[in-house]
Image (tube, rainbow, N blue to C red):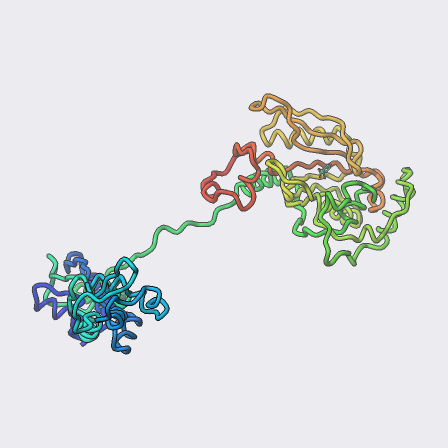
Length: 489
Ligand code: PHE
């Protein structure tokens, strides 16, 4: 008979049953009995009435077992050492002999005491080693109840330990049935066809666990999704920005950024140690870039009029701006024959070796847009910036002349912040220089207008965060990530 059935039969027969004594009388592990009980409880609501209870028993520790093997408790050994000796034995001597540690217990038993001179003396006649005897008896019958003094001593001695066992008292519930049908776990086609399902008893579902929470987009990625949508609505194509490691060539040289520029310093840029250099660069194009840097290379510019180093250009780094990707994409556009106008955007991560503070991190996101077409002008740039920012809900813009090594003219973009009641910088923009476009091989009447902004800054404003570390990094509160709604731009 299986355990569940056995338990059921017993519950049927008696008024009330303890799982512990059931386990003992059938020599079954108590845990298995509890398992069978749980599955009987599932038969129906109110099938059984159970109540949890506890029982305490005593168990000998390995120290307790050793005492039995030694045939003497330390207390008794101490007593025997000083028994009947005139003036007792001095505490120091007992300490040296390793007998003194049981003094307190032997004293509690009333066997010994200490005089003013710290001599331990015996107090009375002791015939039997009651500690040892108790342990021996408990080894045979763990249910024995020793006197509280002895129990206390043996527990404090760590010769014994108390074991608490949780068990159940089981009685028949209001919906108890004397006839236990085998429970069916699966409803089959056959049961339905033959109509036998009506008479079957089905096992109840046991739903465990709480609600499962799905994944959550980081607020920054929610803002990114919104920017992406605006660009796509305006007919822009996303650039592939999955390459964080770039060569200095694409990050700086292709953009006509001089090799002596302070941004190319290790204080501002993270250079790679391994591999330190990039092995693949387009040879012809690189030669044209070199000439443009050194002498203008026929663009009408004078260039920087100093030696251009290929080794410097091959240095690998973590891209400092997404304009490195823009440079690659413009070169690809130039390689297409015939040339066709393009509109590209990107939103991805860039890296700068900066001191971090509440508004700066060493890595952040840039939003970048670029349009390449015949005869574009600064007016086109201003116009597109107006329509782009209008889509973001920003109606008034101001521009301030600025400097970028790769754009001329260049403009910083400001918008009026009603909350802060002042004009705040929202981006940077410009027309790419001929020194950048011509070596790529773009037709000479093709112009490129571009702009860039950070993703974190507007996200912080939108979510009302004033410390960037609350938005990005390991200190971010996960509850905030889980609960931030999509923030509409
Ligand atoms: N690359 C610039 C920056 O890092 C942004 C920019 C992009 C400026 C395109 C002009 C044109 O700030």
